[in-house]
Every structure is written in structure tokens, then in C-alpha cells.
Amino acid sequence: DAGVIQSPRHEVTEMGQEVTLRCKPISGHDYLFWYRQTMMRGLELLIYFNNNVPIDDSGMPEDRFSAKMPNASFSTLKIQPSEPRDSAVYFCASSLVGGTGNEQFFGPGTRLTVL
Amino acid sequence: DQQVKQNSPSLSVQEGRISILNCDYTNSMFDYFLWYKKYPAEGPTFLISISSIKDKNEDGRFTVFLNKSAKHLSLHIVPSQPGDSAVYFCAASSYNTDKLIFGTGTRLQVFP
Image (cartoon, rainbow over all chains, first blue to last red; front, top):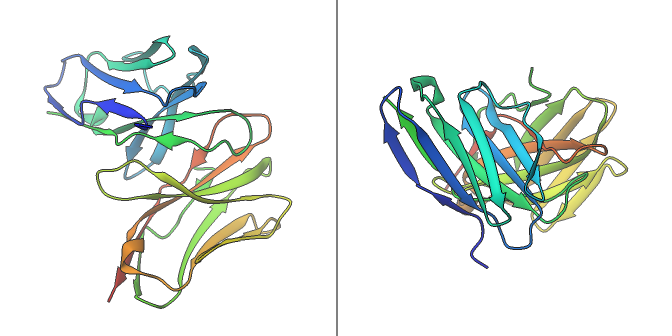
């Protein structure tokens, strides 16, 4: 199995530009999670989906952030407009089931730099 | 507010010795705890977990201890190897949610 796939691996953009991060979960996994990693806050959950439906977006920092999952094999996280403080590593993860202790499988991450 | 805290940002241990990584939590509703390991330029990978009904879980060189009264857990690695050098994240979840709450991570360096 290919694991969770994320693209691009690195993104450098200028403040004010739109950024789109992409994720392909492991086939058959019903849950998809978007995280952001920073030194200060560690791994923060931004939003997660179950069967393509957003369940909890309470971690999305601002209206500039949006996420979609049009089908079981694809999700996007969009930032519009981007700001320098959005610079971080963004991870996508998927899991077969939800509930207590569900093992999440992470992609390699997208390192975003906003100048 | 950090519900899961890893107060040591880094730890350096000699090869062959024991590595002890610590994690504290504040939410008494957490009933399952996990440790993830992350190498540079890779995503975190699951390492070991423990349910709140246990106080110890062992898997090879890795042992996790849970002290519910102190809301504290620790990961012991014995013996430590250079390949264990990575960032370790502690995570917690509760029975009524699909979410994992992660700490800020501890960078472990094992030197020869």
C-alpha cells in the first residue's frame, strides 16, 4: 500500500496568495485528519472528516482556511489569502476507524513557507 | 491551552543507556494514550499505546507507563540506539471522540 500521499512536499509563496494542499488517504480508510505542526504548539488538529463529511472543524484557525473532501480518495486544505504566520508543516492522516485510540497513519507532510 | 504537555523539548542519551520521555495531561476524560515517532522529512508513525485500564505496556525495547493519579505517562527505551534519534509525540484521546490531542514533542538524540 502506498500510504498517505501529500502534495506538494514543499510550497513557497508570497503573502496574499492562495495555497492549496492536497491529500490522498489510504484506500479504505474512512477518517481523514488535517494537522499543522509548529514548534510552539506541536501537532494541532485543524479538521477531520468521516466518510467525506466534515465532523469537527473547531481547530481551523480562521476563515482564511477551508478544507474539502469531494470523494473518498482526495482532500484539499486551502488557505486564502496566505500570511507569514501560516508557515508550518501541514500533515494529512487517515485511519480505518474512529473512536478511542484509533491509529492514524500520517503522510510525509507539506512544508509551507509564506514570505 | 495545552491538554497534553511534553515539558522537555529535547533529550540527549548515550547509546545503550535508558531514554525516558515524559508526558503530562490535564483532561481526566482521556482514556487512551499513544506515542508517535517522527523522523525528519517524514510523517509521525505509531509506536506504542496504552489504555487507561492498564499501568504498563511493553513492546520490545519500548515500555509505556501510565500514572493516572498523577496524570502522567512516560516512554522508556532500553537500550537506546542511534536509530531511535527522532522526535517523539505523546497523544491522548477520550472514549467519546475520534480526535487525538498531541503534545509539542520531545527531540531525542542518542549518541555513540
